Image (tube, rainbow, N blue to C red; front, top):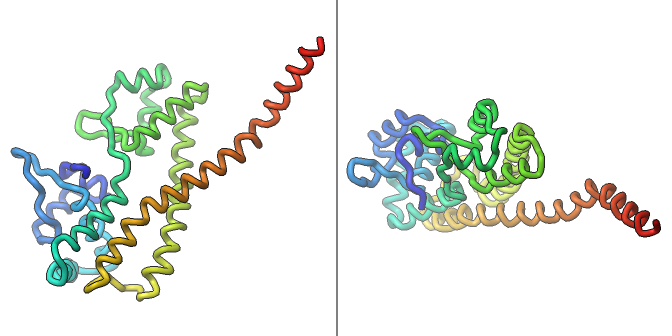
Length: 250
């Protein structure tokens, strides 16, 4: 399970440190664990924070949110409640972030690691500043950019592609998750929230979404790569084959 300082937690949830403290003061968000003087939050805290923000967006007041959370606690064991929160948190956690040094980035991108490209990477979220450190939320994405640059693709173009990939992936993921919401949750009513014996089932549905999305998108990308690569590169392959044949005849 990932660990967050309060500023990291706020950033991951898309809110402010001040709001996190307010939710704690109103007993909507459990207190963090302590490691010495440091306050450490978990994926369960992140899931609870996202749930709070979602309910606030839907017009619920603090008192109503607390009442619902208290009702869940009263009707279920702590394990059931945390099961829901950790299921949603696990779906969001994904690949752990990795600290990257300036030396590492220079080895990866060489002279193309310009201030402009670093700014672009920060704006796109490919890199994040956490205090004095640079962090890659997805090291795999950063390494894919390195591989593109090593093939001769300009880093600025690779960063532009990363933005397009994220937008398209978000769109397709939203379509897939939207189907589940439409046919599994929405028939119960627009304001339905799980309670009673429904909570474990709801937690199970949420916990299965992340592997489902990964499996579906992975299979689709694999099929696409097998089809599109020959389509785009096929003319070059044919030309090389013809050239090789011409050389053989000389």
